[in-house]
Amino acid sequence: MVTRAESAALTRRALLDAAADLLDLGGPEAVTLREVGARAGVTRGAPYRHFTGKDSLLTAVATESWERIADQVRALRTDPARSASDKLRGALRTLIGVGRDQPHLYQMLFRRHGHRPEDLGEGLDRVRRQLCGPAGDPAADRVRAAARFQDEFLAVVADLVGERNARHYGALLLTSAHGIADMELSGHLGTDALRATPDELVDTLVRMVTDAGGTP
Picture: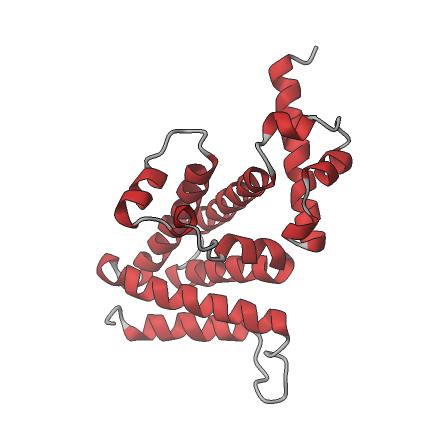
């Protein structure tokens, strides 16, 4: 017999899956609690018992996505059969793959929030509240999940260039990966002028960082 807690967990899971599907199909504008509930096959009021609104729901989707990406990068990092350069190559391709396969999600994960003070933050105090916020706070959970991905990625980079240079090269690699994802999505990489593929560019990036010998 399914308990009330198990039933609630199943409903929440169905809502999150439905929201992720709608996001992939039409972007954030396509995600409404009414459409999510209908797609999940639950009562009209069910979404409101699990989420305070659309922002809360999308924040939960983003949090799960960050956790999933972090898990994938961690699996690469801890794979003893892979070299350090191959781990980095895999981590970059994982990130670019999200941009290719789920562009709406990718943009939501990395977009800068609105111009409200609570969105832009209030310096170190704002960051500290997010990182150390109570468990169950959707915004804090999202920040922690994103920070976990960053930590895993920087650990992969550190294995190749050392701890001292990990942040420098990590920033370079992430900005490059974002550029590759955007250029691929816009169709510019396949033009006669560039004639480059994402995999080729990732290979070049990893080779350049490896050849640099850990000296920025």
